[in-house]
Every structure is written in C-alpha cells, then in structure tokens.
Length: 248
Image 1 (cartoon, one colour):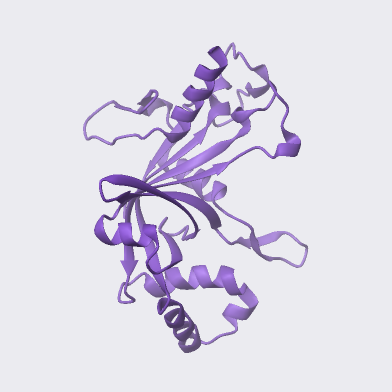
Image 2 (tube, rainbow, N blue to C red; image 1 turned 90 degrees about the horizontal axis):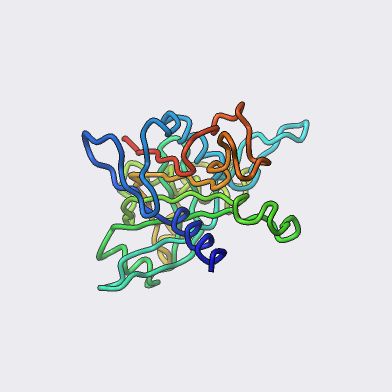
C-alpha cells in the first residue's frame, strides 16, 4: 500500500495543474502548493523547457557537434470531446523563439474535430528512464522528467502571421534541412499548401509550461536519497515543479 501511495503521489506531481492568480503569494497544484520563492527565474525555466523539448539533432557542425535541434517531439494532447475528455498522441514542433507549437494532422481526426469546437488543450511530454538503465530502488521514476503545456489550439487557414514560419519549421524536420532549405519560398509554400488539402495545420498558443523533475524533491539538506543531493546545483532546494508563464 505504501508503494502504491508513493506511485500515485508521483503521478499526481507529474500531471497536476497549477492555476495562476494575480496578487497571491502561492498557487495551489493538484499535489502541493507552489511557492514563488522556490521557483527558478522565469527565463531559466523557459530555457529548461526548451532544452527538454529539443528533439533530435537536425544539423551538425563539421566536428560532429550539434548545430541545431529539430525541436520535434511526440506529445499527448488532451482535448474536450463533447462533454468528455479526448486524448491523442501527435508530433509537434516547438518554435523556441515564441514557445508556440505546430503540427499537421489528418482532417476529421478526433483532436482536429475537438479543437474546432473547443480550443482549450493540455499537452504533456514525458521522458522515461530507458528500460536498459532502470535499477529498482536506485533510479526508478525519480530519474524521469516531463513538461506539461496548457493553452489553446487553433486550426490555421494560412492567413495567420505565424503560419508560414510554423509550417516551415515542421516541414524542415519532415523533409530534412538540406532538401527543404534548397527549395525557394514559392515551392515551400506550394508544398505546405498541398499538405493542407488532406491535413489541418494546428498551432498551439501556450499560456504555461510546467517543468517537472521529481529528483529535485530530494536535492535538499538531509535528503532521504543522498545520490540526488547537490548543493551546487541550480535546482538545490527548489520545487520539483517549475512553472513558466508565457507572455507574448
């Protein structure tokens, strides 16, 4: 029973929401109170979210180091399906400049239909420890981390200011940078347009990024898991849930 309660607590910490209210000292989450003094600076939380969501190397330098990342990852996206929740998996590409996300999804799918009627969404990306590296009672789920994204979604019609850039970011990861960058802008727009005949282009306009790493809860004095104790870490004594509020 104790182990079950521990697992449930961990799940609540990973999936809990945080509500933002004006002129308050702390905001309540599903499993704990978030204290502002235990939060990192906003730009540090943003940088951490971007690092977690960087995806695979898109291009490399001559020495083999990564030049830029794809920022393409698989997410779970929760939508409103009538009076019931809907849940889907879809690959989104993050624009690290604006923190908005983009995907192309087949017309008529559940998430597309849901977004057309209710734009409110919650997304989640989760990094589980690789099975081959798992050691019971040593690294377990405390070595996993995740990012929750709250905001609204919209089906793009091509007239939005962000449309071409967002769709291009997505297509560049799909075609590969050498092939995509070799196209002129007219060809790129025509290619994006052909995709739009069968798929919807979706943009996520986020309000919050919640970065969660349960190992941080043990990076404290008198830690019950001393392997996580590191007083030199920027996460020392910080809350395991760090909230970045997106401001346009």
